[in-house]
Length: 167
Image (cartoon, rainbow, N blue to C red):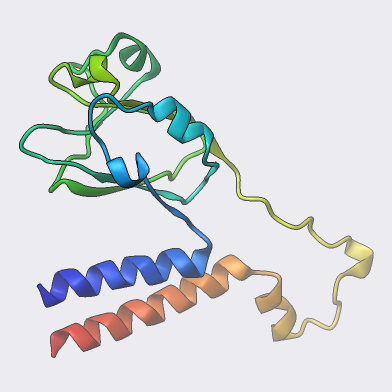
């Protein structure tokens, strides 16, 4: 239990550091039949690196990533990936393309289907060559490479979490 809590804490910390957002699919209703997930998804903006959090009763439901055609037809036979693990499942939006999810076993026909369109993370424009720092200082490298800084910080947090969980 301690290890599970530790990994969840690490996930939350990592999400906060990188600016990624954890979207609970369906809000308080979770992933269940007779919901309007089209309405839910239009009230959220999804960026590259964000996470979807599916909460459901795994005895009855599942979450399948499918292509657009299978989404439209509610076809659960040729899914891309079954992301169902324990009924509290996360899925990272790691590529810039539409994602399509359905509930298998006929539940798609009862509204358990979700389309998510991912946008690139807004970023500040790169500085012009004339305005760049020509001194070659290390501070310039770090300030112009926030992804590198986040990666280093994530590695440090992972090390600390492992150290704390060991004992």
